[in-house]
Image (tube, rainbow, N blue to C red; front, side):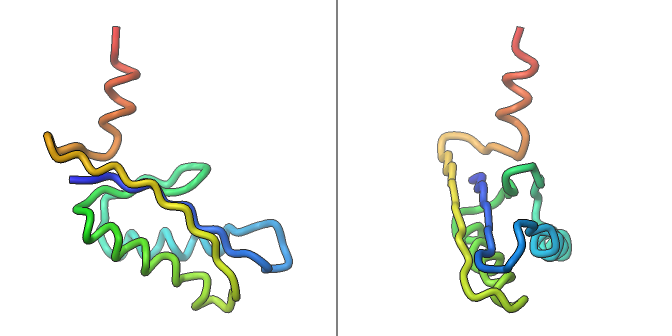
Length: 98
């Protein structure tokens, strides 16, 4: 099981706001039923590596489908093979530590 953090930034939109693109990306993730958490600087998604990379590709395309001509996407992938990890576990371990 892996965790991917992804930030998708449409460029050249003529405005500093990107909310409408993120709303669409979030809608797609909800429709896919993918475990994810939206945060202020991106979205964290849980799954198998192959599936996560397919999701990243699909999400990267969203702004293009909305008329954007340039998209900057940053992906961080944590692929742990010695145990299964789930969304939020790392943060819980830290906040629950004595």
